[in-house]
Image 1 (cartoon, rainbow, N blue to C red):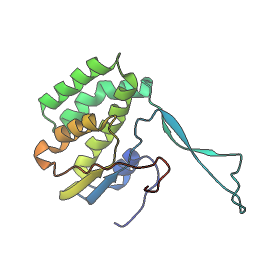
Image 2 (cartoon, rainbow, N blue to C red; image 1 turned 135 degrees about the vertical axis):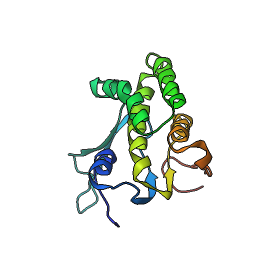
Image 3 (tube, rainbow, N blue to C red; image 1 turned 180 degrees about the vertical axis):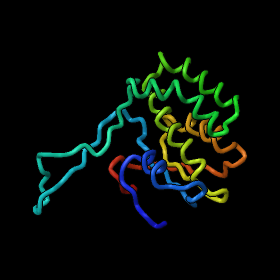
Length: 169
């Protein structure tokens, strides 16, 4: 394949990727940081231009689209061959997080939709690498165990950045 696609990976997977066609998936999703990120452009002199564009939004709300996705998730799980225990876990999360951490629930729904779409396109010998932060990693790990099988988990890499602006000290 050797192609780079831009845009929402859910749309790309649904429209361009066949069953069992992917060897490697690398995920670097938004981190549930509750921030908007802008693309910073500079002119030839290196000065930042005043007009910026939104690179991506990492603000999560339980809007109408997320609400529909939350309600439809058990159906998606069943259609993906996920066992009923995982669907029950989703329902527990739904009830536990809806009022206590609605932004987290919206984020997990976004991630679950995409992870469910990754399962059928990944080859049986394929691998998934996920880059995420500790605010939701344990929830995403549980989702991935439910979707891909906990027996398929191989390893976790944990690193600590020494500076928020890059560069080691």
